[in-house]
Amino acid sequence: MTATCTSLPAHPRVDFDEAVLATFCDRYGATAEAELAEILTRVETLLAMAGLQVEQGHLGGLRRSCEDLLPLAESVGMCSLQRATRGVLDCLTTGDPVALSACGARLAAMGRPETFRDWSTIPDNTVA
Image (cartoon, rainbow, N blue to C red; front, side):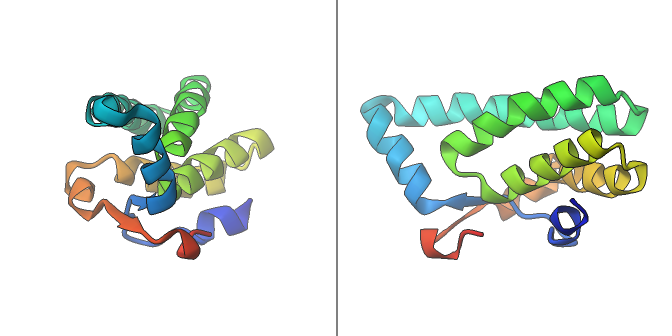
């Protein structure tokens, strides 16, 4: 669990796996853009909520937000967001408050508006 948290970069980026995103687009065809926009809006909302829950120590709500966030991130290949969300869930499961503080802060940082400019796609052969 500690490795999950420490493997995240100091300045979070949200990377998309090109192959997963391409599969998503193929699956939804002409409606892919609208579907993706809906998912990203939900991700944005959940990230904002998770940030508040981290700040306020609302662990039950944070768990629910992460459990809702993870399948959305997986569906469109948001690799770094998946890792950050899993890190928070791992910390909640093990009850490690120090790691939760670090991993929660990292997840919250991914929801800050300035992070959105760093969203990018990465080739599927570099996904960890």
